[in-house]
Image (cartoon, rainbow, N blue to C red):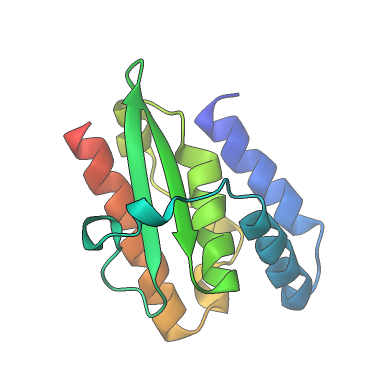
Length: 135
């Protein structure tokens, strides 16, 4: 599935819910789907700066694609990072860098977060872009 198709699928998924409470529940469920994040990877180097809660993002390069793994100590934040890595993990650096990340606006995520969580979202996107730029 292309990145654009994956983004459209997320937009469609979120549009099924009328209330933001239901969308938060969906984010929480996404967070529960994250693979186990090893304690040994919960280091400062993997900590995303600018997030109120603690968010760790680790990655490896496999066959020219970036594979992300993440965790957070807050359930909504864990859902947000899960959503992002669900979209961008397994993509090439070029695919990630060519994305405008507008999917977060299309689903209304940024404006429905508290200011501190919205800042955290911006920091998560910046970190994903930074990793892709190194890619």
